[in-house]
Amino acid sequence: MTTMFQPEIETMDPDEKARLQGARLRSLLDRLAASESPYWRDKLRGVDVEKVRSIEDIRRLPFTWKREFRDTYPYGMLAVSRAELVRVHASSGTSGKPTVVGYTARDVEIFAEVCARAVAIAGGRPGHVVHVAYGYGLFTGGLGLHYGVERLGATAVPASGGNPGFQLTLMEDLAADGLACTPSFALLLGERALEAGMRDRLSVRYGILGAEPWSEGMRHRIEEVWGDGFQAVDIYGLSEVIGPGVAMESPEAKGALSVFDDHFYPEIVDPETGDPVPDGEVGELVLTTLTKEAQPVLRYRTRDLTRFVDEPGADGRTFRRIARLMGRVDDMLIIRGINVFPREVETALLEDEAIGGQYGIIVDRRTTLPELRVVAELADPRLVPHKEEIRARVARTLLERVRIRVEVDLRDPGSLPRQEVGKARRVFEQTGDESPFG
Ligand code: DLL
Image 1 (cartoon, rainbow, N blue to C red):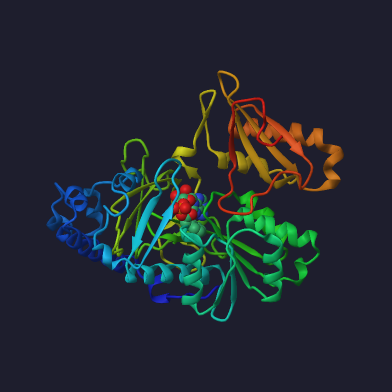
Image 2 (image 1 turned 135 degrees about the horizontal axis):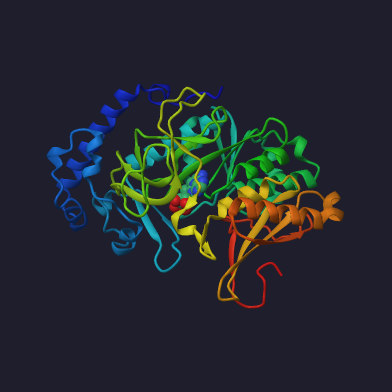
């Protein structure tokens, strides 16, 4: 059993938690109502703060959308004066200006606290060495986990992204116990460790993996490549809310993540109408920051899809749980009238043991109706003579699961390019004759 960083909060009685959430929501609203910022005046127009008495009353509040970050760039959403910021982070948008988020000293403390909780849930404890290979810089991943590891009382190795060979040497020499990085980078490091014959000299036992969607099949590949007893667990978060440390999966309760709902209150709504979905149904995750000072968000529409999992986890924590993220509303591809999520393709693809973890999805737009092509690697060189048979089998599975015909292009193990920095890009558009994978 992994140890709890804050047992009194992690096992809090749900009624007591609801009272805490209600009180925190009310004090947040009182703070925001007193703010002189035009953004907050506008946001709370028509909201009778006096009527918000319990956490249930959160439904009286308006939603917040990503575009508001752009419209108020860079400081318009602050609920404190600019001088109270001790840090900013930013995430790059698909176009134009990045999304900037500010933190007060107290926000940075809470950020470290929730990340410390997450590291402890994964298996970290004081004295451990945790190798942090998320990017350091404007991205929240590196610094977020870094301060979480320190706060726990463990040793952070601020490796950042890139340079896998050197990272493995460091992990061996410094005897890392834990690894924090994207699932795609964890797979790459594990593959390189195996190739270099050094895997058995590494002492890494858990991976704190997130920042991109990943399937159970990917987890299986990662745990396999790292060897017996390695636990790959899922960490979720987003810059607009804080960064990593919004929700965390425990090795004892895999499949769902505990939302740290003493700080981040979750709702799940229909992405079209904004109405709550019936419990247990998939919808868009909406988050409210109950304690954030600098740049709180009320009912932030994350665009991330998940569902509530209300059976308690075997790890004894009492946080509200969500299923592993299914992808983003905006990632949905429409192929010949059928809605397809890239993670569904990954799930179906990696169900086949013959397929390795490196792959790409190509939306071929050379014809009027787009076609889907999947480029993937065989898991093992010994499978090369059976390529055609495997290809046909995988195409059949994709047709059954994803309900559309997908062209499957299988390559030899290790032949596809690997990304060493940032979030793995999985979906590529093809408009000319040049294929993104040659
Ligand atoms: O990715 C924060 C983070 C860093 C999370 C390190 C976990 C580990 P952003 O760059 O703002 O922040 O991207 C947030 O990434 O809305 C999701 O769409 C996606 N995402 C993050 N974690 C997961 C996950 C960080 N575990 C966006 N599973 C989110 C699926 C994830 N998607």
